[in-house]
Image (tube, rainbow, N blue to C red; front, top):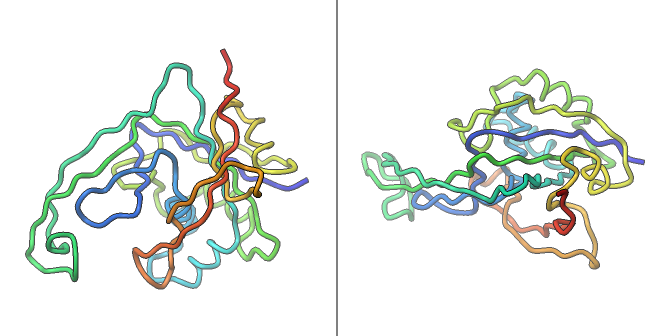
Length: 219
């Protein structure tokens, strides 16, 4: 049996940015690994100029996200319009002071997620550290952007199970599609670019996401 830290992510709005630049900033339909590392890093008090601690966190944990099933609820999004200064002209090249560009930022509405976090064998940052941090965060946590405050505490419980999909199936509402770091060739999967390169800001590499469930939902 393995130990899992269970978190709940709920807010009127959430934003989990896909790979993009200043112009259109779409949100993924569920929390990205890079976004969750940022959330946990904020709780731990890891700063932007601490790449070693950022890497320690990234190397220490695996993550699985369940998009919680809520009867008759569909994925809803809105797009917010901004103008931004000191950005890349035409969304490419270097930043140009005093340039003003238009941006469109996408948000998920009323989304509910349950997250399972576990330690890798050689983890430096342990689940005990993460549990304390999400209960007493160093920096104020938000769900993707500062305009997305949490509407309930992050911490849900600690549980033991054989694997992340089993533990998520024990947490109410006990249904929903699970997107996990962990799986094998028998599991449906797709590839995304959401592993941050700590020493190369805003650069990401790809990973496989393994998909479980979605076919069994309560009446």
